[in-house]
Length: 579
Image 1 (cartoon, rainbow, N blue to C red):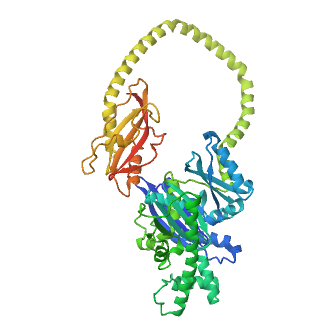
Image 2: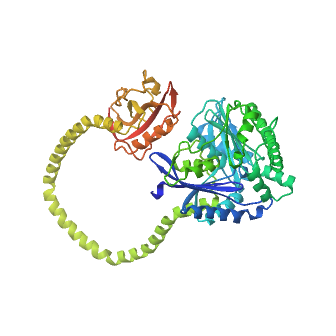
Image 3: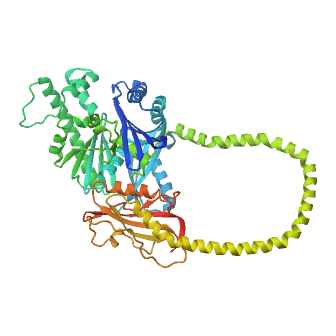
């Protein structure tokens, strides 16, 4: 595995830490190693959190033999201030200025005391923009970063848990019809993600696993750790109604405590759904996905299905992730429900994600800037030392060199004057011959260029994907060509063998064509976006395309009609050619 392909993703939760080692290759994301552990922190003794967190991260690496290196980690949602803001219609050049103003107005701390970032979510109905602002106090992120780097890792990027979970959802589930509600039940908080039409809205509820543990501890007079062990050993969500209690009296009592807390949680979820519908203009969820360490209490899914009256299932973050040969499927199945954030973090290093925020601590930012300046500072120091030496040598030899050079120049001028006429004649003859050779070479190359290009593109097609049209253009975004692949597809038959890619007629132009617009389609399935990404990765290796300009996908990335998904890619040619 190349070092550049290795990705370390670390999820730092309120009561546990999870790590995943991934490999990013041509077939997408591949999990090669993972581990998780409890921090062992009593919520009433937060003063020990830093040393316990550092020890937990070290144990994660040591137990599974994971090498240290650059890491992408996320912080829990309750540590981050999140605010969704709608901006009025403004010029593109003033968007950043407006966002900075909104950050100063909405973040409840002095802006110089926080690390903040934003993400544009899309346009509003009034033509404005919807933005999510995220901010964390500098001292909090510095403490967490100290633990991460103290364990031997190098911080490269800092994400927020709910946003990483959303990226994992989009990678595995794609675009779903209607509104999906993700219920991420952690230790301290339950994060709700409303996902609808490519947009996301999040809300945190301070009722989760610790609330259950504290209720059990109060009822039985136990310590927090004793109550946590009792919850894991005997806990389940009581079914209620006419169902008979278990014969174990203690277990029956624990289950009723859990159901009471879950009922409070459901009440807050119902209020959040109402807020999303009335204040955010969203729809009622038509399905729910459970995630998080506290979501695996027995009958938890049944409880929410009964209360929400919609289908409820557990989110599988590894649906589109390949598993390495050394990964235990059984071990992964027992903890996959709380590794969604880890997958979302790894995706940040593999490809573009719907939400890309980075709350990198200022100490890491300054260190990176200093590292970038270091070569220039060293070069400047060396230059400052060499200048006096060069001046001394120049002064000593200047007179002798000038006299010697003058004599040599005079001799050469006399010789070159005699040869000047012959050189001009030979040069003219060589220029004529060169032009003839260039014309012949251009004709031969242009004659074979298109067939060779088409053969190269067809050879890079992946299974269940075919090209419909290839349109040359002198600009990155053609304005006088077809605007949708659907205009080029007529009665597609997925069972037929894909026809070879063909160029589409373009407006005649003498200008060199620098771009290709590749319209394609494929059989619809869960892996449609992954198939397009595979094809893009294959195209990046084509000698006909410019490797310095990445292949773009037109928005929306994929459209589906009658079992066929379509896509449009734009690629820059390595050498422009006249059409």
